[in-house]
Length: 159
Image (cartoon, rainbow, N blue to C red; front, side, top):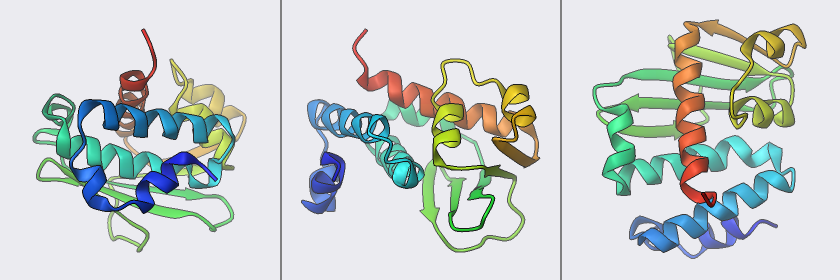
């Protein structure tokens, strides 16, 4: 099991009162989980860490100032459904169906989602042609989300 889950198990307070080194360690554990192909939990981990980082890091939070969107991520067979709601400079994550999403991303499997979102330059056309992803909505919304995911990854990887 990934170290991130054990950190999460120590309590929300521990995560809410991040110091920069604790935040970096939690994000590094997220990257380790991804590299270990824990792709089923990737989206949940990514969104929770992203939400916590918005909460504690004002520089990262600037990316969503005055941004309002409702994202839906789901797999093709319907086992995974995650909604990410950006409102009031916050990110709210839930697994309940939401009405009128701004953008819906349908992915073939967890590894195709990881490959697409954490690629240094996501190739949307190639992913569409290989039937790894499908979407409904404005493509700029997925570009913004991919940028946020890459920025989060760059916060923990050594320069």
